[in-house]
Image 1 (cartoon, helix red, strand yellow):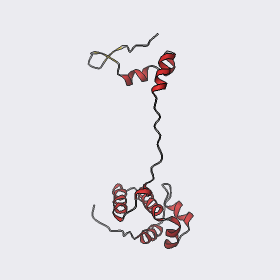
Image 2 (cartoon, one colour):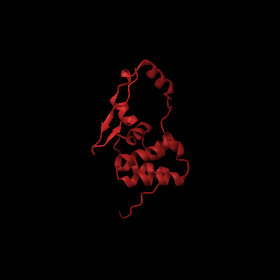
Image 3 (cartoon, one colour):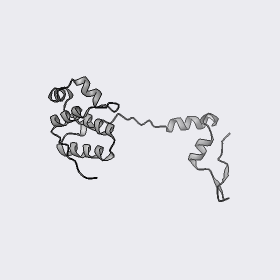
Image 4 (spheres, one colour):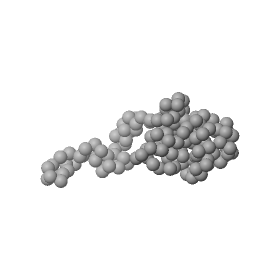
Length: 138
């Protein structure tokens, strides 16, 4: 038995067939005949992904500046701290923590997405990274 899409009357009163997406949502996979289930399983291609780490790409001063500028444009303090954390990881947290005068663990915590670093930590890290805070009008 093959399940066929049923006609649908749209908002304008026109009769049309269901789209593939509408049909997929309307008919549960388990309701399809076994042969169609097997066919769909054989067509399924898994996409393998891996986490994206921006620290891998922050290899030049220009990239670092562009990345930090993009994070700053949003105005979200946690995003800025996370961006500085990514830059710090790209440079090496242990050495950077020593230069900034904090422990490595404190630096990881402060520059995490859930961290809330003090301004003194941010300024110390930025100085160690060679980044200057330059105010400008909005």
